[in-house]
Image: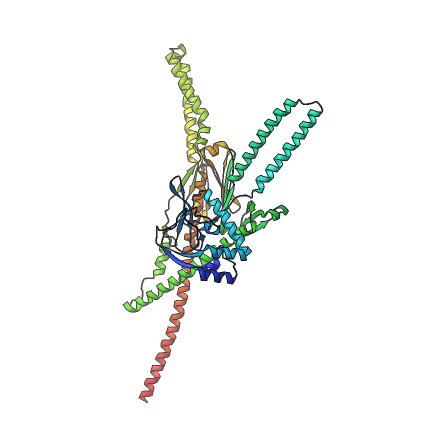
Length: 550
């Protein structure tokens, strides 16, 4: 009951609809690796994952491709929200799972009676349609909760402006012909060229619009934009850095239900432009931020209860063995947490991930000296092969040798300079080292836990073709840059993973210490109460003995 009241799209439903869901829901169990449903089967039920983890799959090129991971307290099976729709994906349990199974007829009935639920349902269906078309690689425990792209009004407005411009030019051509300033065949030729250019421009704009999308996971917001042969930008912000979410709609936006989503963080803001169904999307984002806090609070309660049980077990062992100084399990676990992420069971690797600028940057630096060095070698071979007299000239040979040594030294210097400039991701820091051969070394470092946002940009056709770009890391008021690194998307992902990992470990250690302190207080309280009861019993016993003596 509590899960259904909190999970999307059932949150904020009226009590009568919640009761209707509860009375008609089933609890079902699937073991690990079992298929929950298969592609192309009837979509009769909608599901909520109560316990465990599963994955959403789709057959692509005769193989199953993973589209999403589903975590606890998230719903799936969106095909059941569409009337007479077969399954377009499959669902498979990763671990043993317990599901809440809801008949689609119940959802249709609630949708007819509740407008808010109907809007959320439509937003989830639109997100599901995008998820089917795009494949996104995320972490094993990261769930894509919403995916969208700018409202189609963007491309419609561009087409309208293009048509108005063509219409204006057409009027100008007609006026010029009527005044004898332009021949008729020139008009036909110009109209053909203009039509081809206009259609090409509209196609270009449509492709760029289709490449822009944004999505929310259970951990972060990601906004990706790409311009053909020009640039690619991907910006992401973790939920922990969000301060507020604001929806802005113009007059046109209110009419067509779209707007801009302003996501403010500690150091700036992220703007998602032309977001369709803006109010529903804002509700989803607000829900995700609050749900993340609720899950952490529940995890803290479970951990606190576990610590109390451990202390009770510890005291029972002390009484049974008669040992006063029984090993403190909590203290030893805190020590272990410094090298282990207790929440996930993943040990800290203490490894450094090193990145350098792309090899194309090295190539651009050494191109001229290497080209000159090769020309010197070819010149020497040419003169030798032709038995030229100048090859016997000592001065010429000395000049050629000195030039070759200088060029070789220059090439080695540039290579060393390129190799010495590194970007490092450690367990708790990001480091930017700029070291000149035989010169100064500049080293910048910042705590990885202070990262507020991460974005990357691939510039130009070479950046898109060879997959390199610059990663921008906002830390407080400063911005670190990993310039022209290979596969910037992977660097961005590594930074986010390192931040999440460090923050989780640090949070686990701090909470564990706080829980130990709280359990110590409770233990001290019970010791005082027990001591008081023992004293009262001792006083009562002494009074009874005195009475018997008298």
